[in-house]
Image 1 (cartoon, rainbow, N blue to C red):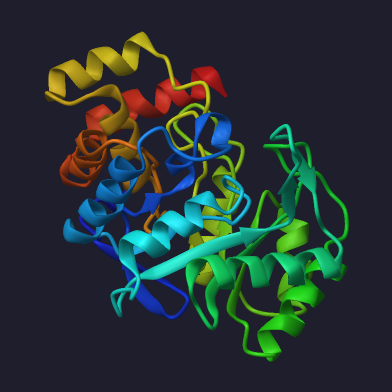
Image 2 (cartoon, rainbow, N blue to C red):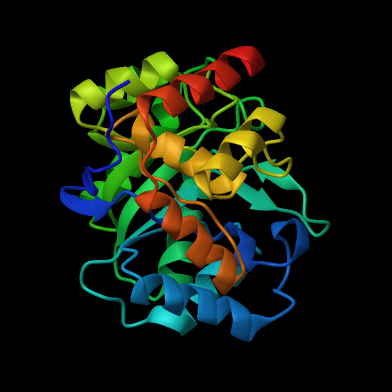
Length: 291
């Protein structure tokens, strides 16, 4: 496996962004619902991320709902000129916090306006169409109607670039016949590697791949082999898992999330972790065993 960790940036929406970004999902309350337990701490995490050089933040107005975007606006508006905020549409939350599909064109337009209002923007830099599929796994089916709706909002100047989330290769190809796709956000990490071939295909096209649940999501990656390797490297298991992703392919952009400044700093340090070919082989073996 080539070593891509030294490549600091990759193009997203026509401009280079650092490959270690920040995912804002955990800024909301438990279950990504309601306000955070400590709003000041949430504001501090965002400001620390920007101070540390993060220039790519991933969010959605259905986090909270509305809460996360409102915190981003309070912490960072007016935004740094080089900050790329990526949001997503395609779901809503009910009063109990359940995630419900919202995939009709009217739903998508409403979601775009919600994101604009709560982020305090006139146009959204990147909007990912989040296909519901099998919750955290894609399933085949046409997404022409949804992508066409976003392309129309793009023509109206409300959306600058379109991305996709939780999609198959066939759905990406279908979307590309309608508009340019600048990024794909799917479930992928050291032990969940269904998208290996897709990542390489997107790299050839210069399209960013942004893994969600890079550390396992609601069930963090657990591996004694990973822990042993991390101990030898003087790093945490999660730092090694993030570093492996940066080594995996040059088009991978990371958005690990946290509501802790200390954890944020720990995540960002993973970008400096160099993995030898021997360590990479051992990590790849862990993924093969779990895949």
